[in-house]
Length: 275
Length: 186
Image (cartoon, rainbow over all chains, first blue to last red; front, side):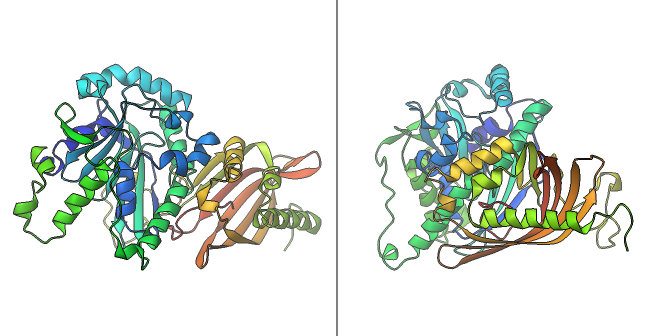
C-alpha cells in the first residue's frame, strides 16, 4: 500500500490523521448513479481548481460555500506526488472549511496539534481535495467526504460517498460536518448537484462525432510546473493549471498499454521516477 | 370503521387540498410561494434506505447481535438526503434564482403525484400528523427521465387560520439512487 501511495501517503494523513485517533464516519452513506464516465469526477477532484467559481457560483453567492473560494490564492498549487495521484493545495492561511462557526473555531484550535503530527510542510501548503489514482477522491472544504467512483460502463458511474470527522472532534463539530455533508455535497448538495450535470455534459460531448476526432485540450499551465522536494510532488506555478490532469492521464495511459505490472508499478514517467 | 378520534371528512378534504396545492406550486416552479407553506421552525428531512438483511435472516451470521442495526432507514443523526431548516430551504430557492444553478438550468419538468393520505390527531391542539406517499416524475433536457418514490410524514400546524408544514420527514425507497441528483423538492 505504501509503495502504491508513495508520497501521497502524507497527503492522505493531512486529511485522515490530523489528530490522535484519526477519523470516524458519520453514520449512513450516499450511493447514487451518474450518467458520466468515471474519469471526469476523478480528474475533477484531482485538479479542477478552475471550475469552482463558475460551476458553484450560485451556491457560493447564496451562502452555502463561503466567499473565500473567490479570493486570490497566490500560494495555491496543483500537486502530483506521483503514480497518477493528485492533490489541490491552497496557501497555509487560506480558509478551506465549511463556513460554520463551530468548524472554523475548531480548525483554529487544532492547528498546533496538526503541525506537530504532520510537520512543517503544513506551513507551505494546505491540502483541500484530491484523487488517489484511479478512483478514490477526498475533499475537505465543503464537506469532509471521501468517495469511490465505481465505473459501471463507459458512460455510467456509481458513487459511494462517506462523510467523516476527526474522532476527537466535539459533537457540535461532527454535527456541523454532517449537515454540510447533506446540504452541500451528495445527491442533493447545493454544490455537487451542479457537478453531476457538468460531468454528464462532458461525457456526452466527448462521445460526439466531432469531439472524437480531436484530442482533448489539457494544455493549461503546460511547462509551468516543477518538482518541489519540500512538497514531495510536481507542483504547478499557479493555482489554476491542468498539471494534475496531465499526470493523471499519463498514468492512466501507461496502465492501459497492457505492460506487465512489474514494469509499471513504480511509474514509467520521468516525473514519477523522480517522485 | 370509525371512532371518535378519527378526523372528519371535512378535515381530510382540507388536508388533501393543501397537499395538492403544494404539489401544484412545486410543479409550476412557484418556489417562493411554496416556501411560505413552512413554519419558521420547520425541519425538512429525507432519509435514504439501505440494503440490509433482517436480524432473523438465516442467510447471514451476525457476530454481534447487540450491535447489528436492522433498520434500513437513515437515522435523523446520519447522512440523510435532505436535512434542512427554513433558512437553508430558502437558500436553495434563492440559488435557483441566480441564473447559475446549472443542475436546474434548463429546469426539470416535474409532476408530483400525492396519494395514500392519512390524517391523525396529535398531542397538540394546533397540530395534526399527515401521512402521504409520493411518486414524482422528472423529465429533463431532451429525454432524461427519473422516478422518485417514497413516503412522507408531515406535522401540519394551524397558524393564523392556515395550515403550515412544521415537520416533513420523508423516506426515499432506493438503496442506490438511480437519479443523478436531487435538484428538485418533494
